[in-house]
Image (cartoon, rainbow, N blue to C red; front, side):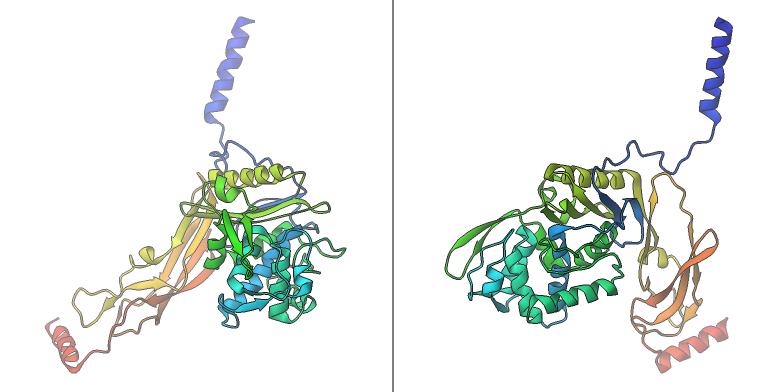
Length: 385
């Protein structure tokens, strides 16, 4: 019996040493603990989904709706139709909104910046409606714009009925759509700046002061958190969309329908921890990699043209996984001249031999057309050669 036990132990040791190990997630010591109705974790580009559950379910999302309100305001500013210093008159309708609010004075003038900041920091319903009315004339017209923009972003599982997230029978979204929306909103520096405010006074034109307190606790207590939008109603439960960045990894997490506020922050933290602990960014193509390719400038001895890709190609892979991507450059051996930004050639990004993307390679400096003297030098070089 003792000999049989010893034999079995030896066999187990051999199997442990020589059986193949799945290296894809070998560095991950945990799975995210997400006690919510739906969730998703993806990178900030929206190209790589790292974890998901029920991510397309139609659910009420409370004040997370305001992400679209914020996006439309930011786009108005970006397009030059609106300025942070513009003034907005708060209507009686806007100032009478219930729920989370900054208690606007009816018929008082506020700057766009102060209203946008209050929407981002403390989820002010009254400020949201005031901005909607200023941009579109009334909230109904603004909501039409919200739905039109959602379609443009292919948010096919979203329907808006107001700009605040207050309960409405046919208003819904899903975790995936919210993550896509978040990936757009975080491109605006002013949004990220306001998201980092923890506490700040909101001063009304009358001199009255309300204190704004950030509803996203992770901005203070989670390393790398840069932004977030909370939401909660009886119908929606507790919701959160959040983005965080550590080193070169930029993630977006969405949790919907948590049982309580503590649960949403824990679930979102667990999602982010899973992402940062299990995945790494790989820069497949960037300016450094591109400039390893040599394109000579004909009439300047030992001069190579500075190059850059039209866009970087960065992918996210599980830690420990072998990089499956390769780059094939198609570039001339030399150029006579080039204007800044001229397409010199292209690079193909291949995965397992299949082209995934084709990216133009551009001149990253100005090389003027050769003068007569330069041409003479070229002729002499050819003659000597």
